Amino acid sequence: MEEKFYSELGLMIRTNRRSKNLSQEYMAAKLKISQNAYSKIEAGKCRCSVYRLIAILNLLEISPQDMLSRPSH
Image (cartoon, rainbow, N blue to C red; front, side):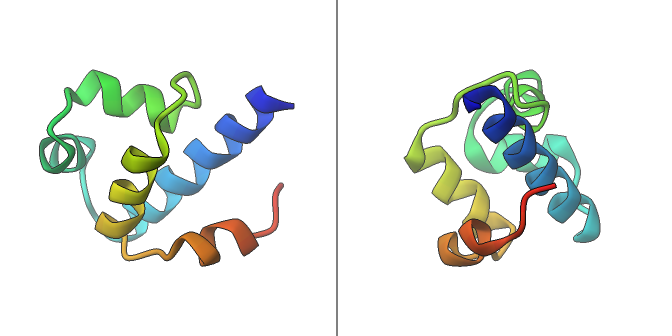
């Protein structure tokens, strides 16, 4: 169940990043992490902290409430 959560979270992040025409490199630079580390978040292979998740949502201009209310696939 946890694995599915992180996979769906990563997909939501990737979809929103692409819709805003932002690169993984841009996101990683803003978050002060490597592009490889950011890629793992989008792939659902990394359990990011709540702090990092909030930073990602802020960059994508998504509120935590909106993220939690999105239907899962």
